[in-house]
Length: 130
Image (cartoon, rainbow, N blue to C red; front, side, top):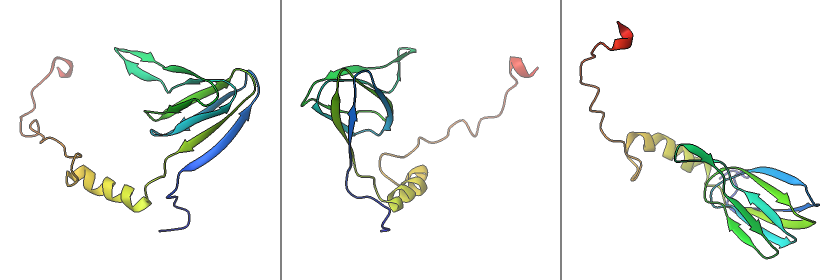
């Protein structure tokens, strides 16, 4: 394993003043822990019933939020606040390479694709091709 690969969670502490916003890309499983003050957390946008939806959470001192989906998250202070972001440990690069190579072939459990049944069917003309 190279020295640049992390096997421990990454933690950072952020201090903000009232009205300040902080946008950060968080991965699923990241934890936001408010040490003091109040912050509003607006989760990454998601598709819901044909429209975009964003979950909003208000956290007080001692509050904890686990991010359930990766994406850009907005953290805004409602007064002076300090919070900690803890991101889960990244898997080693060799794991990502194995998953990339074997996952597409269906050799890894849970990553198999259904058989392509349309490949053997002959092409038919469509209204747009005439």
